[in-house]
Length: 260
Image (cartoon, rainbow, N blue to C red; front, side, top):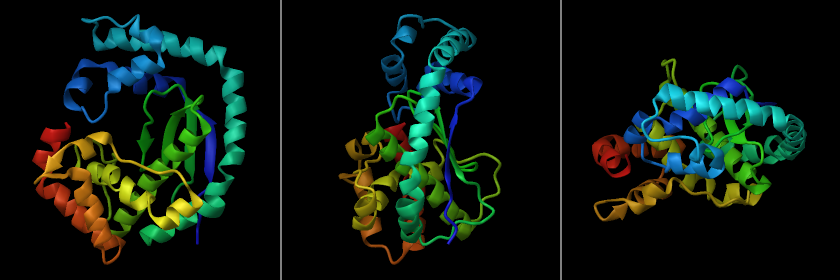
């Protein structure tokens, strides 16, 4: 069995800047309401809350974020490198115990041609990912238990995507993103797949999908509970993913209306 390694690197400043700035753009706030993105940014970076003003253009917002990022990266460079080395040792358990269990759960072989997994440390209010390149980004000061829980969450997306490719292929050059059906699938299956006895034995970090999936209902049942029920009734992982995808596809508009 091929087990991907987890690498830890320092995030590119420009990518970090764009990732934070776009959460503050007016058009982003209007189209995606699955999380309180702006509030998370201002909580993580109070200096931005005091600087970003109503009426600013997206370009002006970007410039404010960029100036902050360059100052912070210069100020905390040594701390970030120290944290990078710490996490490298902490992540050894993923390759030895956690990832093998997750691959078994999804009934998938990690291709020898697939990339290793890279965790980037930077200054992030939410944690971006890219399932095509197997990369994710976190705030370097994030508490260890949250880093472990978030890493398991993101790796779950990567493994699901490998399973989906094995089942149906994937020819697009961009990863699934909100409001794609596959994006909703990736986010909703976090709860049932990662809270199994097998996964919790090696990774005892209870997992939840986005709270909005529990708060909103379809046919008087929470959206998330529909997915959990399908998981419990599965014949195998492929059966579950196909049926869950079909459920989301059939109710896509309602789900977006409730969660978007």
